[in-house]
Amino acid sequence: MEKLRLGIIGCGGIANNKHLPSIKLAGGADVVAFCDIIEERAVTTAQEFGTPDAKVFADYKDLLKLNLDAVYVCTPNRSHSIITVDALRSGKHVMCEKPMAISYAEAKKMLDAAKETGKLLTIGYQNRYRPDSLYLKAACEDGELGDVYHAKANAIRRRAVPTWGVFLNEHEQGGGPLIDIGTHALDLTLWMMNNYKPKYAVGTVYHKLNGDKQTANAWGDWDTDTFTVEDSAFGFIVMEDGACIQLGASWALNTLDVEEATTTLCGTKGGADMHDGLRLNGVRHNRQYVTKPALGAGSVAFYEGKGDSPQLVEQETFFRAIRGEGELVVLPEQAIVVTRILEAIYESARTGKPYYFD
Image (cartoon, rainbow, N blue to C red):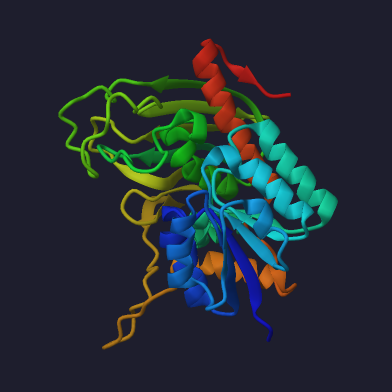
């Protein structure tokens, strides 16, 4: 089987820590081109993960001139749309990191380009591939929860503000924890509900702790002058069918109720949450029950099983889709709704009014 030829645009943390190690582990693909506006960074990344003759660029348009099967867009959020559209129109399939874009309008350009070119476009929502997520998705599809009419999308950190890169730069990222980690929780929740038709959203964002001098932050003190994005945000989304979702996202919040990229679902037949591992609840034989599926691989004596990481499954899924051997799991038609809802929450917070979707 001929190996896929891949190019990486943006050689920062998400490329080096998530995508490239997983691409290497998955096998079946060579990374033959690297691009970063800081060319030295691309050189270093190419030396570790590239083929011996891998090419390095400072301008992504030069990389797109190469004969590649797919391109990974691992740049700050603001440039996701323009690079993805150019990559699709140059004949490449695209894996774009989350969020899809900083606005619905920018995301729609990406979706339109994918439809026009017939090339694959997927977004890096790897939490869908976790064992607990896959089990819960199967339970939802089997109807075990019934009609899910209330949900919570959870992305709450106590004191874990990312202080490196452009995370605190609103111009480059489009926002703070809501667009950074809230996006994962919302994607997971919408996917479980299979409900992508929002009616309206209400939201608030807070800048309450970003001026703290004693931060006790997991990654060291943040710079109070550059921390201009929100430190927490909360939204309430009502869907066209009447279902509702509560979304909470924070990098810094004085709470012990901490969990990230999880969902809570309440349906007519049962419910589920990820508070203490995956738990399903309901009523059976006139008695309440709670079950915790055994999701680990180590159930055989003297053998500690090791399941595939979500990042690895993400790459394998993308590779199969490129080869025509399988389907994408994260569709751009789904990811664009996540972006649209996040934008609505920010807009509601700005205006102080509910945001109604067309």
